[in-house]
Image (cartoon, rainbow, N blue to C red; front, top):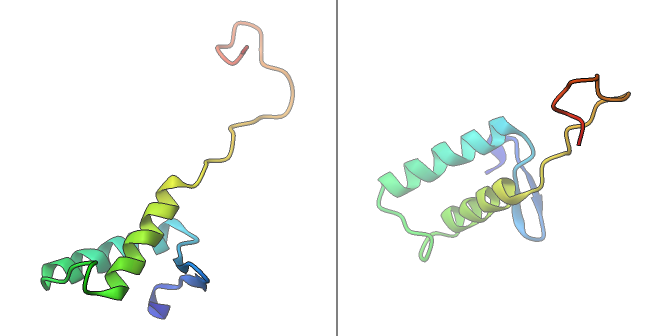
Length: 76
């Protein structure tokens, strides 16, 4: 899947950006539309795994410099 701008690793395709993720979703839809299944198509299985890893990766915490303003809901 080099045309999608994705990197590879020992685990297979790595989605690095939202555009990689969207391209992978489109490719999975194409493959499924052609009747492919992850059990018989390694590309589809690899993409489904990459999508699952991308969705499961932790988000960065929302942080701001400084203290919360008085009366703000960010006072936790």
